[in-house]
Length: 252
Length: 262
Image (cartoon, each protein chain N blue to C red):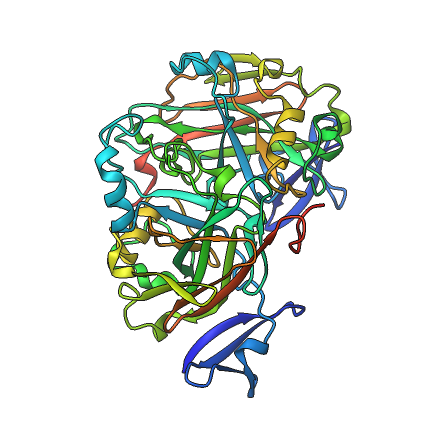
């Protein structure tokens, strides 16, 4: 089943996907454009993987993949829902999207062997882990100023139950800017796959229900501009739309 | 007397109280308790952020290497990190010691607790958004490099003791001049002061909220010292900030600590 959190006429609902429409949990069928889409779950601890696809690591001129997985955390401020707006400040020269499979943890997981890891997966959603490269600095890189900005991590639209995804390690990923295909990859090219990531993280800390792991992005990151519509898609999981807004949207 | 907000173990609602520093008592609902007898819970319900390299001692230690690889230049924006939910414990709860290390670093910090949603806050208005202050022990496995996020060193279970309560903003005259003392087994190991901050509290809140929102209930650790003392299994670590309170935790093998794994 595909779940969402939406606001419809002033009330928040748990909703489901029904024949391409949105069904509220009171039974009403509504159009996807008539609701406000929230991230499909309230973010708790959110991990993000850097350089978890060999081709993307090369693209960023890292010679080899890191020996220790590159993991960073995100705060709740950065998440927006489907059809959200992502803010690009006017002084920025390079802001790119990152299409990612997001894994939602179900259960308390500590010292989990990778062969048992899928028992601790509740489901999946799609993330767009925007980064403003101008603000990258070499302290706790990637630093929060580049990676945890308000509005720059759209999540959704759907939270898809784990049982509905046959093989999460074989899902095509695609990003489109204004309808044009810009990024294409497959989760099979991850350096550390979903089971390995759960094994790694749970080896030194406890994962809990609702924690989310953004699993990294393949190559194909290009600049985006104010007004662009950016679609990140993970086949079978969802198609997440965001629009870039600039300083003109704000009153100084 | 100082006004505080407390969370007690086993009770879901929060209580306002007033603390008498002289008597080491707290008055809640017109009843007076000895502070040491009250089962205090974690007085936070938001996200905990820390500011690295915001203490002059810590900054000076790294400064000679800031123009070298891998850092290449001194930091411009505040260097922030997150202490995730699994790390947060209250006062008098054991800090789990992972089996492969013998010592942990005790990063004593004043934590600013937000009272309002704060976005793009001006420095001169920053205090309007603060609810109050508490104490955090930002526990780490000792590490030298600050190039990559120190998740494995800082995000382990129980690595963020918080407490004992939140002291109201207006009960602290000058939060940019607070003495912080760290004792291990009763012996003074470190003394620092928030007047050593590179960005003081107002400037830090302004610079952080220029790009990311802090919500009511979030906490921001304003800086830890490079001379954070080490502690080991069996040690009791006490952090005292006059006017804010005392945070006390002992260190226990991970497999024996509350919430540890077997």
